[in-house]
Every structure is written in C-alpha cells, then in structure tokens.
Length: 502
Image (tube, rainbow, N blue to C red):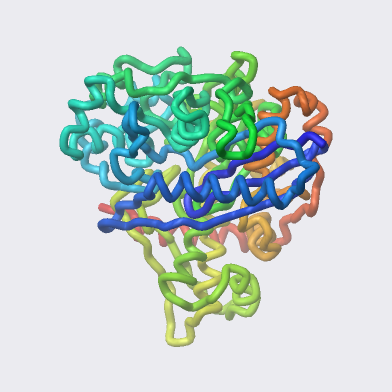
C-alpha cells in the first residue's frame, strides 16, 4: 500500500504523520524539543534538536504504520519565519535558530521604518517591518556572530527557513530549496514578481548567494537519502504551516477562511489571483503556488494562542495539562470580568506593537484558576475577532468577493490543538457572530503537506476531489446576542488600549 509521510515541524514539537492512499492518518509520532530563552523577548531553538526530533518522529511513524506501508513521497510543513544559517560544506549550523516569536530586532525594524522603508517593503513583500519576519533576524545573525558576514559574502554560508534546512539535511546537501509560501515570509521575496528582491537584499545587507531556490508547493525537492528511512524517498511537497493548513482545509476558492490555533493563531483569507493591500496592517502573502500560478491571501497573525495555556501550566502552575482549561472555564464565576491580554512577545495584527507586554485586568480576591483559564481562552476569540473585523474592513470594490462578511453567513474553518476544545470553539462562534466549522481531520497542517506531496507524486487527485473529501465534525453556531458579544468585546478593546505601549 502506498502512503505519504508528512513532516510537521512546529514551534514546540515535531510530528510525523503517515497518511494512506485515502488521506487517512495511519500512524503518528510526536516529540517536543527544547525552547531556549537567552533574554527577555528572545526565543531560540537548537537546529540539531529540530533535526533529531524530525528524524526520530519520521522513523517512529513509519515503524508504527507497519511493514505494509510503503512511503511514496514526503511532504514538509514547518514553523515559518524561523531562521537557520549553516555552513555550505560541513552542514554545521552557525548557532541557534532564531524563532519567529523572537523580538530582538525591534530597534532595527523601528530604524528601518523611521528611514521610510515600510511602504516600499509592504508593496514588494506584502509584509510589515516587524521582528516577526526572517529578514531582520538573518541580518542580526550576520552582524552579531563573529565572522559570519565575511563567510556569507564569500559564499560559505547558507540561509533557510526550517523547511530548507530539513531538505538540505535529508538530501545530504544535494538540494538547497524552499517553496513560495515560506519565501514570502522572509522580507526578502517579491511576492508580485516571484523572485528574491534585490532592493530588500540591499536594505537588509543579505548576500543573495545564501538564499535557496524557490519552487512551487507541489514540486520536486530532491530525494531523502536511504540512510534516513531505509530507502530513498522523494520530497514532493512543501508549504509553511499556515499555508499548509489552508490547503488542508481545502480553502481553494476566494473568500474562504481558515484559522489555525497552535502556539499562535493565524487566520488566512483566500483572495485568489489578487494580492490585496490591507488598510488595517494585515499581511498580504502567498497562500500557495501550484503549476507556477500564485494564489494570494490576507493573513492576520496572533503571536499567543495555545501558548497562553502553556503559560498557565508551565509559568503559573495553575493547571497540570491543557485539557483542564475547558472544565475550569465552564466553572468560572460569570460575574467576574477578568480580561487577559497575552502580549508576552508583543502583539501581532492588527496592532503590531512589539514593545507591549501581557496584562490581566479585573482581578479580585475571588479570582482563581478558573477565572484565569476562562480569560485565557476568551483572549483567543477576542483576538480572532480583531483579525476578522480588520479583514471585513479591507473589503472594497472588486475585492469584496474575496473578503469576509463577519456575521453575514461566512463560516470559519478551524484547526490546531485548541480546536479540540468545544468550549473554546463555542466561545469563538459567539464572539465573531458566525458559524465555526471543525473538520473531522483537525491535523490539517500535516494533511495539506501530505496532499501536496501525494498530488505531485500522482497518488492523490486534484483540488476538486480533495475539496469534496473535506468532512465536517461539528459546526458551532453563535448563541450570544449582539449586545452581549459586543459588550464583552468592548471590554477586550479597552484592555488592549491600556496594554499597548505609549
């Protein structure tokens, strides 16, 4: 039986999922790895931790799938914007990877904005000058690691997001490539011209020789060496995690929405062949590129979603497992109006304030773990509404067909770990005033990577058939009145105003 191996390399763990010929998960293996916090606002990963966790989970999933599961191809999806630099000859990493959450380049981004570069950056890349993206992190590494810039300019160092690093390792250095979605998150790629942008490379002082070749999401990315899985296996699909989830949710028509709730939360709106320029500081990005044709999206990024539950567990110690939060939220005192703004590493869209930090409002002597858990889960719904309302406001003229009507019948497709919580999803539907659809297969990030690889390998059929196979697990209909949801939302907006840096 032919199967696809999907590598889902995330922020806190690596997973490998084997999908069968019907795109049904046959085996899963997951492993968490170390999070490194050298200073406040700095987040790093050891690239060797990433590599070993991917290798172990791939081998574990293949073993669990059994001897009859022949792996036809590999699909890769990955945490986006995280920067890895390694030696072209030895493969040794320059140092720790700088993670997408890292804020160390805030001052550099501010200087670039003050220098008048933001409008042109947005026009070329669809992105904002924020530490979130790869380009300023790469520039920081070249300037702060002794000898790095000289080695890079001499052609001795390679740069990549995590997908590129994994492709290079799996092919034993034969292929240095990425896909269009990951390239579109670097601040270095011109999303309209479809190439690395010479002006952005000049502004950020990045040698072009470091950069990977950019390919379609479904393409040939080389062959994983037989050493790793027992025989050579082609790598046939690659997409950044949020774009892979967009594919996995079959959001192939303009106007379709998906929102993924993992460490952060990311909502993407398919805008088709039109790269919509946001008036609300949302991102214009590449949803996918297939057969050389680009489909664009508007994206809103929330830096902290599932991470707020991890904080309750690991930081405060008020819960022992994430699953406890639903029961606590249900038991919370409804009279208490505790509001949590989890700006642990600043706030993403539509605020883009890297300097503000988290806050909690409305604490009383009666506030306990239940109220904190409810406030944490509610913060996810409030932030999602921020994004959807910004997207709603971005509708204009010809773009109206490719944008959301909040409360107007549009459904939001959800996935990720937090989507398993019925309470959280019902609260989300209540707050956005629109249905929330949770699919049968909530591992849509890995599913998207698997479909891309399987389609390229000839195992799976095309978009139309894949769209028809999407199956609903549960629809959450809004139950709150507009008065009640708007009252709660105004409490959130007031908390955000108090939290944002002056």
